[in-house]
Length: 213
Image 1: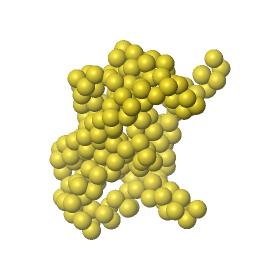
Image 2 (image 1 turned 180 degrees about the vertical axis):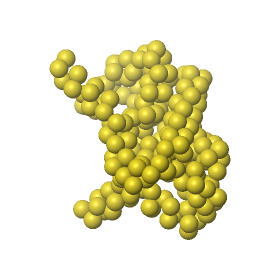
Image 3 (image 1 turned 90 degrees about the horizontal axis):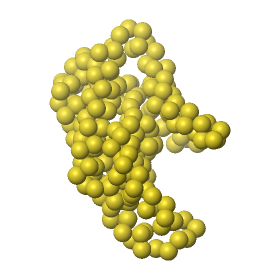
Image 4 (image 1 turned 30 degrees about the vertical axis):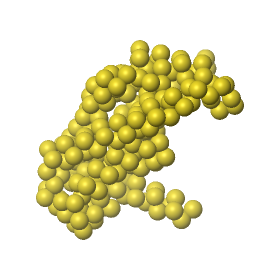
């Protein structure tokens, strides 16, 4: 429970914690943020790391030049982290895919389902990778499933680049432009919660629709 309380404190007061890290580590903050974004998108076991809110707050700090942060460098570094993270996640899925495809149907794996997954990603994989970038949890699992489903590397690479850059640039610029507006700055914890809720809203709507169907 104590760990959960500390984690929630970091997420809800990300501006204070991130500003403190910038003061302590200076330009090394780029490497720290790179690692967080890389891990959040690159490993299926770390979808809980802050993504959307981290980009927003980082953009807001870059706007005031905290620790010498530059918005262009920030977006470049974090775009690289998001791109490489997805590539690693995809490669892990590709490595596991052939092994799983050779398994007979079991309680946990259904070969027919994997065949359908491959067909789905070849048809809809591009927009899935782009849209999932803006959905917590989904952006962590989408490249992994794309790898298991054997989505072709060329298609994955193109849409990975588009999704990663679009996600990082849009949220960093939102923070850069609006993160230091007095009302936003005074209510940043509420804004962070709002970002999380808005990000999860499509997931909730999709779940309710599937329940009705």
